[in-house]
Image (tube, rainbow, N blue to C red):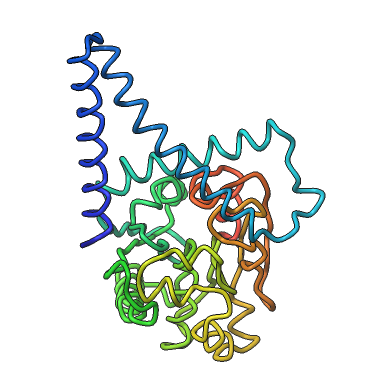
Length: 300
């Protein structure tokens, strides 16, 4: 099943659960509005607990947070609220409706951008960044990595085909890749398989370049490949040289609730840009992060 299908199934389960709670409360004598609010509130509460649990699990394996990125209580609340809203918007609106798209602007002087999503997601993750690229009239394309639990190396051919099509349609000789989470590893695996002749720059957001402890709870070949010190990650690192690393900008957050330790996103030889007060999913929506991404995309 595709990520889109999985998200739609989850929505169906949520709706049925809310209706079940509502009907039970109505039969118990509650008003319809009270029953509706209770059913909806129960679903939201479960989703909040799932997000909170991610923060708890990542905190157990967290890297030390530099003093300049440490948060006060209000900052922690903002962090959680933004991550929760980002997750809900993606899972309940953007992701279930998304299809890969290509936008070509003939007057653009910058390399076109290929958008690669992360584990368990699809092209809907890039809604906010795609709007910025449209506003700047930068050609771009997105894709859906399938199968959802497949081998990361197996995605390289799809990336190559999409890059070739994007170059052909835009008339460009190279592309800039922007990749979230596992997508950053997909980009690196693609460069290992096909070389860097078509690469202007690779920008990764919250990618587990050295693995994440939470991958132990994931399903599929790709989740196993993202585990800390996996043989696959070691082979990927061994297959790169300094020139390849110099093409990469790694943007990450010291408060990532999926990548732990958070410094796993630091990549030797790459340009590393650290943020604080931003969660994993929110990296694709946070204005400060998107400003940095657009700056990297536009950098000569």
